[in-house]
Image (cartoon, rainbow, N blue to C red; front, side, top):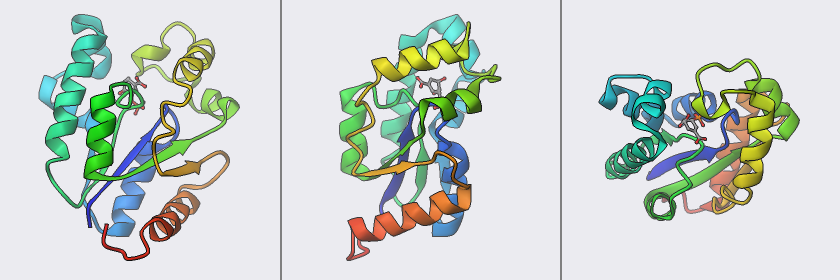
Length: 173
Ligand code: S3P
């Protein structure tokens, strides 16, 4: 089995679903944001603050490429990992890409008390609305799209597994 890569806007449940999906598929789970934090030795908020977003995006791209040189893993990515075309090409080439989505109201509900995400600082609801607009279509390249709104993690994992079989009936992916 190749790589299974989860993409999607902040709050769509990538990390939670990725962990459960990895367990169901009996694959290791890696998380791109966690790898960035481990490599830099500080939190994402601190990286944004002290080194800036372009630096964060460079590290993100470098580690995405490095992690996807491995096979047979569930990789969860940060919501902005799709912003560079090179990252999109790398993901499509080295795994099956699954986009998680959720309604705007659900994202606001899930993220309104968040204090960890630098891009939501200064008013989560307004920032979410603006970023959703800016990123319109950015996650559409994934051949599998899963709406997570009002669904349990188990239901989402079952839906992903069914869609993966439909997408690759030979099971060779
Ligand atoms: C970001 C999403 C975050 C993290 C960083 C930037 C984004 O990951 O990578 O704060 O640009 O959407 P999550 O999607 O896991 O919150």
